Amino acid sequence: MSGHSKWASIKHKKGALDAKRGKTFTKIIREMSIAARIGGGDPNSNPRLRTAVDKAKAVNMPADNIKRAIQKGTGELEGAAYEEITLEGYGPGGVAILVEGTSDNRNRTVAEIRHLFTKNGGNLGTTGAVAWLFERRGVVLVDAGGADEDELTLAAAEGGADDVEADGSVFQVFSAPESLSAVREAIEATGIEVQSAELTMIPKTTVEIADEASAKKLIRLIEALEENDDVQDVSANFDIPEQMLEAVAS
Image (cartoon, rainbow, N blue to C red; front, side):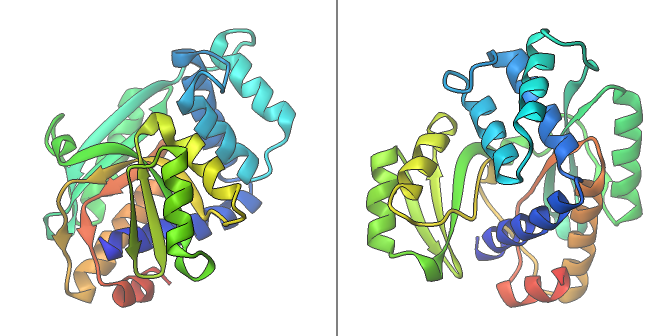
């Protein structure tokens, strides 16, 4: 999964740039509101909300914005009624793609996502088409050049992580979704810098993309999906060689 984890690292860097333009604020605010609506407004007892709040703080979102987003979710403040949407499809090379989003107009969002798939060489599938190929996990990424693997493994285990994998330029730390915040805190307590900490859908198997043309088409589709305002996360089961991925994503 070297190509897959490298893409997570690239997305993190792009996300930091987007945050400077305020692009990610809306998506994080929606996620906090939905998480609060489903699991309550206390981040300490709501792992999903805690993760969203951590993401908000990581992009320097003002505390008042975070508070209002949570209050809209719990009903203390008025807000738009967003619903969660999961769409499934295939990209170039037969890569399975899972799109998770939020919308106040499901028909509009589905039409937009279908258009993006078709325009970029993919096709939107039916419910259940690819979801079985993924499982939700907590994933912490750490720069391999800035951490000792033994120290990281020990800290991750103390936080409740299941596994640590060295993968090219990063370490991937996997955990159950409810353990993500504790794992991140345990790692950071040792002074190790965390690149990102996300709840994400991890592919159980991957599809190797060996030619640059297909890789370009696939990344173009994924980036187009991620640019959509209603899309929260895009998961795909590709494995593109790291050097090729860096070239096509630049």
